[in-house]
Image (cartoon, rainbow, N blue to C red):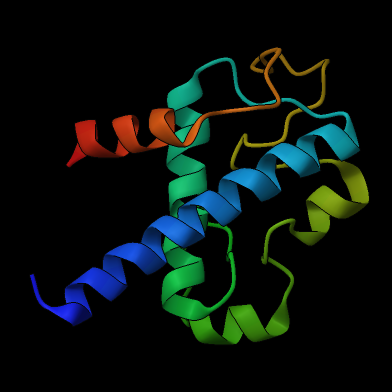
Length: 122
């Protein structure tokens, strides 16, 4: 394996861990919970990490963008997005209020679980 590939892999894992940690802390701080289906949580955190690697910012992975770079600069859809910050509305189902029918009881997810879900989809 060459150095470039090793660096890219390490960066991706660093971003994945950073987004996992951010998600846990944000859920606890806002009184929200992860989806009852942990694979939803894992896929969203993986998407945030990919955008952090590719764009330098955790752009919401659950939306379509004509120009991702412009969206990052606009900051509206950077996680936590404006609808989440203002109204606790998370389109991705990452941060769910307790009254949401899809809300689980977890505010934590292990890096191993995220990697396991990612690898099962590869």
